[in-house]
Amino acid sequence: MTETTLCFPRRTRESTGESIEEVLLIEKRRGLGDGLYNGPGGKLEAGETPRECATRETREEVDLEVDPADLEKAGELTFLLDGERHSVCHVFRTRSFSGEPTTTAEARPTWTPVDDVPYDQMWDDDHLWLPGVLEGNTVVGDFHFEGGKPLDEAEFVEYDLKWNVSFDE
Ligand SMILES: CNc1ncnc2c1ncn2[C@@H]1O[C@H](COP(=O)(O)OP(=O)(O)OP(=O)(O)O)[C@@H](O)[C@H]1O
Image 1 (cartoon, helix red, strand yellow):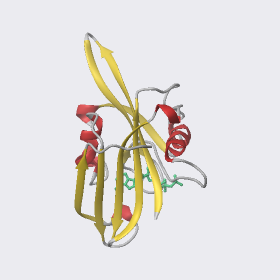
Image 2 (image 1 turned 135 degrees about the vertical axis):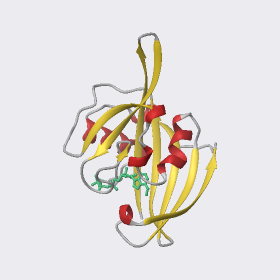
Image 3 (image 1 turned 180 degrees about the vertical axis):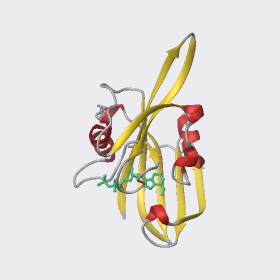
């Protein structure tokens, strides 16, 4: 069982008198979920908190600086593979960051309108929880996959979600 993180930087962009709500997504270029869109994120290293991990992964993957204290916990997602807990993912969002997102060997970043998120090019579970997270809700979810490793080739079979939970981290 591994612990992982996802970080969703948000901004409001003004364009010809219109306010466009955007989220920073990455196209993953290697590893688990290669070719899929997601937020920056990855596995916790020894001694790291989820916030510290989200900050480090966001820096490593797209060269954007976020302060661990500015991250708002938005979700806790448990992924089960053939009935066993495969990973728990801590989901964060923030409107506070510095720098410009940059393409790296791991990820290609794009500011994406929240109304235009490419759910058909993301993990099969994302369309179930990410819209609510981008609207400002919190969520705890269990997602069951079957068919053996790797997780990104297994079949998504069922899920359970609880909305508007409070996190004390
Ligand atoms: C099953 N449904 C899923 N839905 C949404 N997001 C999912 C996911 N399953 C994994 N993720 C996320 O994908 C990243 C993989 O990263 P991760 O495990 O670190 O793999 P990767 O091979 O890149 O390893 P490194 O940590 O970079 O070495 C990590 O943020 C993790 O939370």
